[in-house]
Length: 301
Image (cartoon, rainbow, N blue to C red; front, side, top):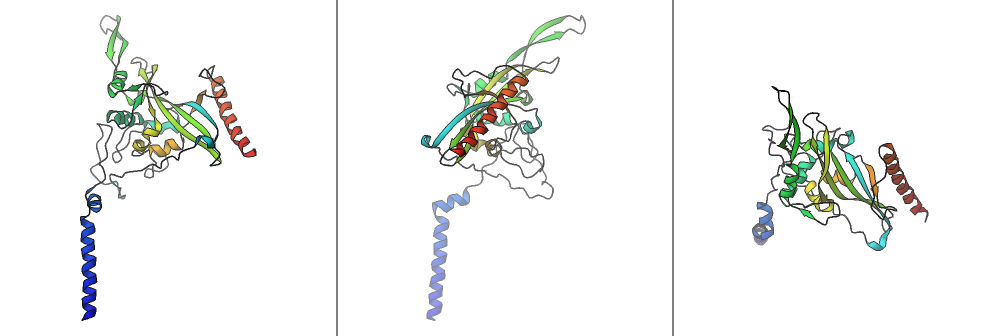
């Protein structure tokens, strides 16, 4: 009888403890807090009304980025800054124009950035010096500007110049410029490349020829500020339809293809690489090779 009473008391204590834990604020919040609903950046996107075949997808997943560890100034052996330009028409850069599918939503990379600026999640800046901030209305003004086009009258055959309002097409943002810091950390014993800024370049499309013209800088984002936002959107994987990495993973690893247009090495006036075509590409390639050699020399010290 005493044994039964003892076990009954233990069981009652456990049930009471579970009830108290269930009613505690921490557990109550955990039980009632649901994963935030994904915010789709493309208003034309429509979700699929059926499951994705045989795959049980995880809905409303929330990714987290690993915070970059702080690099102390005393641990830096050297640092060099590069400006590199990437063309989204290159095959390796095709993820920048991927608009998502009926399951992932999202939009093209530029649409993700513009939507984040609209919602106040990240800031848009005038240039990569981050001295002047742009509002969402400022960005819209750059996208919806007026252009002059030549119109030929089908009856008289005479041509005239008309001003029409340019409509935004994500495909017109066909070029980006990234600002990268290459830091050799003595404490880590290796170089640490860090992406610092992303600048989108917008071009107008000639309605007669379809060619890009009048390239202008749209806005610049400070990448460390945008990492958590970009982690919620997927990058197209050409080899596997399901296993896709997030935009923050893609950019952290610098998996894009780009060429050097400017360097901080022996450049006090901030000039871009002189020349054009193959000559400029060769100068940029030599700059990358010199950094690799610098990293090798650090191991011999």
